[in-house]
Length: 366
Image (cartoon, rainbow, N blue to C red; front, top):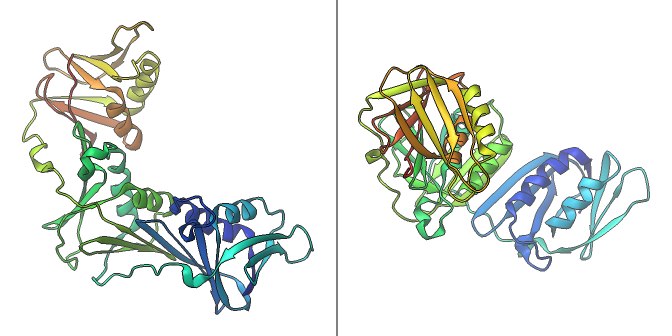
């Protein structure tokens, strides 16, 4: 096989492939990237034990063919390649990479035959379509709340379901929950709720734009996500996701509103003195103002204050600093509402005006 192409175009796609690959062992086929050229198209594939990736880029094909190369070294070669255009050729068990107009540098990478690379799975279920912007919003508002406790594997992913006329995403680690819904196209058939590993969602979030559709297919074992020239798929997480509806408060008596940037700035200042194991901070809520302070430790203590709109009784709520900061970071609204019933019950964080998402955080013991 032999082809020429633009370095930057190739590098963009190889970097995605390298993110998918989890093994960094030159003798293992799953450490390799699959390359196939035909009809002036380069097909790129990568996979690990759970996630699969495929894309196509335009190239100039001189001789069609296919091979696989060790992803880690191939990415290193392309990322440091000093010219805009490169030539890739395959001879025996060597992949040769060099400039199209110069003799040097010339890289020779050992390759493994393409027929050793496993076939990527295909979906037997129909795809449904939604705007890629909506899907990105759903990932962004939920994936950060996934649990990293491997003993509770059923919370190690984001739950996706269709409920009536909504597509819903939920993530929780048992102490907080992120919820977002989008209107479902009436053509989308009902599907049972599934748990999606964060790896594929984070890759889609990083690589997708705000224009165009995304096509999604789900079966008993896998999810398939296609957009632009990209095709991703992943095994689903088995298990029963917690009943998230029980976590959502039916009503909350008190609420306050604050400016998002003022809250984030105060959290950054207070974080300098937060105890690293517990991450505990306190919100002292008073009419017209909110104190934000750390607990006293060997390092010391810090207290800050920001204005808020609130006319209820004074209350102090202990919270995990990260659980408060992360939703404030990913929201973009100027004003945020915090709703609650008492210092020991769940608080709800949502934008003003209300949108299609909210975040629930359980207080800590004072």
